Length: 144
Ligand SMILES: [Zn+2]
Ligand SMILES: [Zn+2]
Image (cartoon, rainbow, N blue to C red):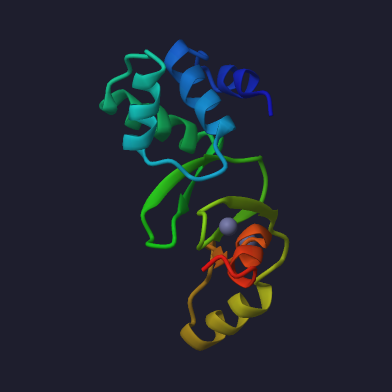
């Protein structure tokens, strides 16, 4: 995804701190908390304050470039996202997150809930947990 183009479309610059945060998230297979991002950037000698990390994440989330993904203990972290309707599945073993395309995935469920509650459902939040292939192998390979 061309982050620079998307930012500038919405009237934002790809400033150095924004670039650093995006690059860090690009390299990560697990969701990162603002604290983890802050620490990792400090190790790379990028002096970005924690407040700025929060602000940057807020902006990127608003633009749909970054999504909140929860770890198995339900702590929120951040991941880069592709545009469009997507959800994440997170490994309970290694916390690796994978994106999968959402389609009309939960239409049936929404229809049922609307009927039962008389609500008009307009949005949803969905995330799955499980064991990734690597961790399944570790679990059966006698590693534990
Ligand atoms: Zn795993
Ligand atoms: Zn969905």
